[in-house]
Length: 208
Image 1 (cartoon, rainbow, N blue to C red):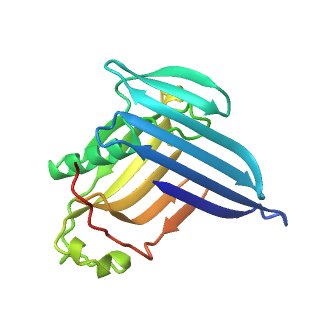
Image 2: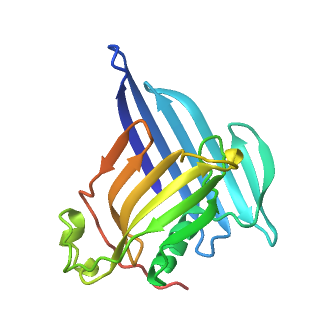
Image 3: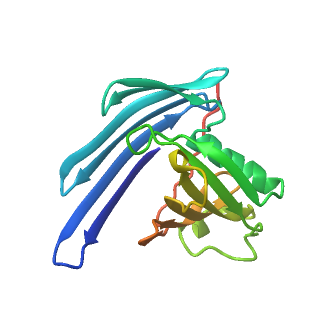
């Protein structure tokens, strides 16, 4: 997955800041390996970079970072990686569940942050009930496919205990095949909305 988010922030005092986050990650089909790298630019100057790998063992997850510094550490085996997290959400939705709680490791921040997540899954939406108006509407392969409204709240695991507010929350609609639309990012102080403007679904070659 390749991700880029560029934000222009106005402080209201005549000052503006340009934030540019670029991230790339790869996760294998068995959810045993996660490779990740990210760069954060502030006003076109590199302010932070992360590069690392997480490997699942029988009773733990081994993490090795090369940036921001060389470091190795272990994580509890209960943590899941991002793609596995999405797969679990879809499975829960298909089973009619409305709540899913999982600890998640995605290599974000400095590569050491862990999240407790709470996913709230709404009732399924059939294509004939609520037609999408974005790029998903032009895809025959999505026609007739169920989708669910989902909100995932991310909590800093290091601060668990007592009442917490999420670090951020993501809301979207996810199809049975994992494609999502109607994105909303809630950072508490501000909200970012995303509309799907282009979608290309390719035929995957058979695995060998």
